[in-house]
Image (cartoon, rainbow, N blue to C red; front, side, top):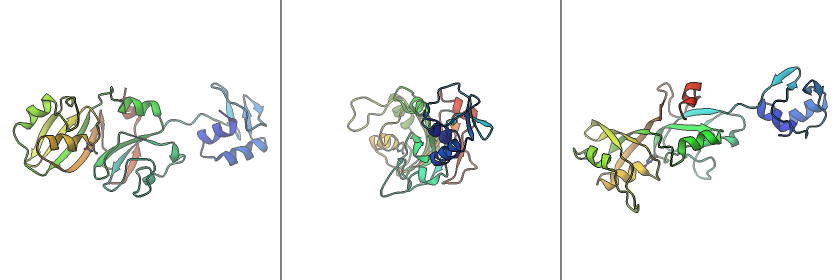
Amino acid sequence: MRLDKYISHATDLSRADAKRLIKNGAVCIDDEIATNAGQKITEGQDVTVEGSTISKAKKRYFMLNKPAGIVSVTKDNHNPTAISLMYEHRSEELQIAGRLDIDTTGLLLITDDGQWNHRLTSPRSNCSKIYLVGLGEPVTPDYPEKLAAGVLLEGEKHRCMPATMATVDDHSLNLTIAEGKYHQVKRMFAALGNHVVSLHRFQVGDIILDPALEPGEYRPLTDAEVASIL
Ligand code: URA
């Protein structure tokens, strides 16, 4: 990576700041003063800025308590995006790991680590997601069996993977699914002759939505939470 880019990735400095510091002789590579902002930096080289060693930007991982009305894409011309709720440098590098519909609330994971995102969201990952589902019609006693057998969604050839549920009250339940098909939960309950009136995700794998986060708030994931996505 170019030296000026490397510095701006590893610090809060802009590329222009980095160039200025290089010009002023404030940047050293392996104890030699650097003069060329375009010089390529390879792994293992020691870069210092005004005497302090910097290291390459660490990957970032966040959980956001997504409110309704926010879209889970990085750019949208009509609605506010999840990323627009975050005050982070280089926000254009952030990606959403597992989207939620505009009206779905709860746990949204955001990162600039593409491999981590892939591990979480690839169809083969089978990472479990738990939703609190509010239904228009009452929960019926046959749901656990039907969900365990795999629901056939309209327009699909193959059944969903087995899902489990725990009844919360007449019209709501906690649903655990291992996939992330388009509008999956809404389509599953449509296939069961019901309809979803509210949907809130509160767990992905072992990562649980922090109850201290108000809708619209976010926090970095802990190292243990990041490591829990294998
Ligand atoms: N299933 C849905 O139908 N919507 C979501 O936002 C998430 C899962």
